[in-house]
View (cartoon, rainbow, N blue to C red):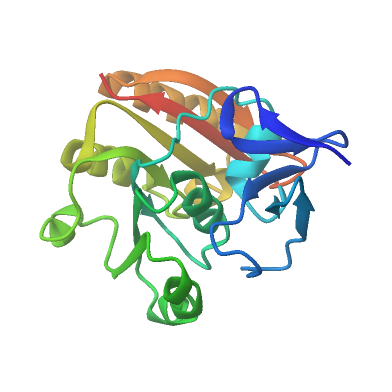
Amino acid sequence: MKIRPLKENNRIFIDERGRLYTKNLIEGKKVYEERLVKYNKVEYREWIADRSKLAAAIKKNIGKVPIKEGDKILYLGIAAGTTASHVSDIIGEKGIIFGIDVAPRILRELVPILYDRKNIITLLSDADKPESYLHIVEKVDILYQDVAQPHQVRIFIKNIEYYLKNNGYGFLAVKARSIDVSKNPKEIFNEVRKSLEDYGLKIIKEVRLDPYHRDHAMFLVQNK
């Protein structure tokens, strides 16, 4: 087996079978049920697409993944930390993730991960109230959102206004059924695209995440 950098981001890796990996920031430690693989004396963590919407977006050819070493990330809906842990690998010790979640139980379960990964700070807060974490979160290079709420687009835009740098990038994972269960997901995604464009964001790419995540799409945008 050979592991090589992904051409769209040299901090993300792929093997000849199309499996994704990140270099393990904490050698010997898993975060979920991912495999640990050694190649050329470097340890990698397999990044499983049906456990991570960002990995699924990469598999579905979202193209450019503008997350780099040293970046500051605002992560809305950090949940169990699966995707965040791979982002932690990518940004390295010089980067930082501000992870927001409204569920105390979820954040308690993250404690073992945080013990090892010093580049993740979690905050118990409501992503719909971005002013509530102004005292901790600073301007960021990347805004990543995975929040299953009917008004998830509004949440995304509000946080962009507060925290995303000019020319910074945003990833919005959209769960169509959380917005309106009665509508066709394609119609929902078209409405989301229009809302993002009306706000003035540059949409770089939109991909459907099926079959990894049913009725989901990922939007990659840039703040103007």
